[in-house]
Image (cartoon, rainbow, N blue to C red; front, top):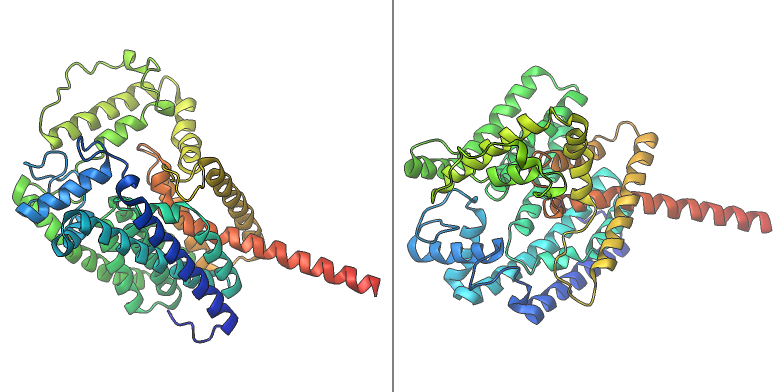
Length: 427
């Protein structure tokens, strides 16, 4: 499954060189740029990354998981990143631990490239997979994200592991693959809650593969049990602190509210139709989340009937466009500017769309490909009710690059055939 034994020596060498160069370049950026890649300020704590650093430090010092207010326990974020970061801080010290965490991310990013190869090999072939690794390694956000302190790197690794085990689980119907998939599903949810609904993708694949009801029930029970076991410490902690069941976080209100403004323009005059005078904010995170959720619901209930087609477009095509049009690349590194990064990102998207259409027409029974495709669609759709942003699509980009690689491979094959025919004619 993770073996390269049957690969040619050429494939092994090229793959090893790509991974080694990628890791070396990423390590260079970590020590060259240092904390200059932080998105926020350690004085004002005005961004996710610096808040995560403070959360990890507070967790290590007091044992309490906090976020916005260091003095108050939080359920605003998932516990995964603060615990991992505090582990490195506990060994190396605060800022040395942050550097060690970045090195850990570089290792995970390199391992994720290897996973791209295994997934690509499973869905297509070794040559397409190797090309996908190269295209992914050249995608500058992969290097940049290793330098920042947010959930993307760890989540992406777990997400790719989940996808890889699901490819085998759906095809071979072996319990061990469902168990492994369940483990990485649960671990992923400790970093990014939207992955919790991922079984929708597997259900579609079960229907497509014509699973029996008994098989569906068996695998559902096994995977759900694993998920519950992994999430239970978080649930028990939340119940102990808040005296109610909180499965993930209490922080979706603000993203939902932001998402109700078309093109995120909160000066569009739509607030004039909403009477929000009865909603009061406080110092309580959960109460404020409820307030923002209720305002978001009121806005949708009031505004959508007024302009249904406008909002239908916004909650489908509009937000999808925002999700994908730009790469998640906020600070320039290695002299690669935003325009160049965006151009490469756009080329990959175009190739991916063309490759997807071409592959669907060419092959009807490639279930691995369809699971990858549905996973990308799921990643996009799960965020449409909320504030959409390229950051949330970043973990799915390796899956997007796979059909792009397939398209490049097909173009190259056609060119070879065309050149061979020309040579034959000239002979």
